[in-house]
Picture 1 (cartoon, helix red, strand yellow):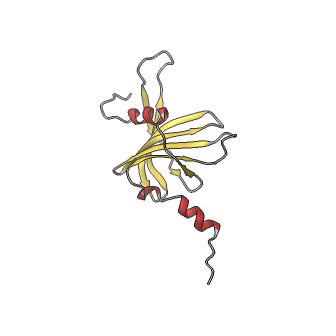
Picture 2: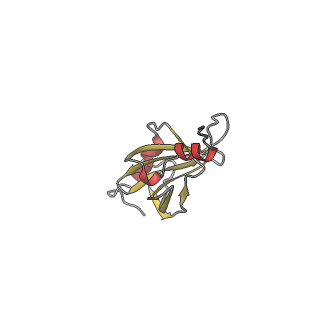
Picture 3: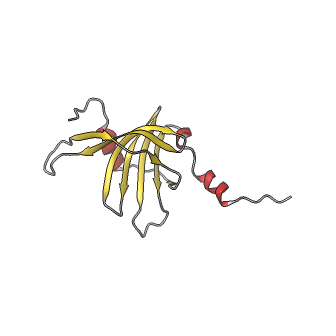
Length: 131
């Protein structure tokens, strides 16, 4: 008897269900190629919340988010947008509803310390005053 794995099986094994991940820091990209622009999501999962940054190197756009994992997506997203002037020493955030993030076409990478993730974690600290 010979066992054959299809591509769908292999992909399912490398893309764990976001909701079932243990608490910790994670990083996902839409491509393994480092020589071309990519979308990258860094996040921290704690309890029932995910807080992170979503940056697209193709467009140069980046934002912070917080939401609740459901299967392989993040739902009920709140987006934090940095509205501080470039000369400000303290970051000010504007909160707004955001769109769900689906991880079906994203690949997990080794998570490392990231300034973007740290910045986004501070955006959702309860003691910060938000406009």
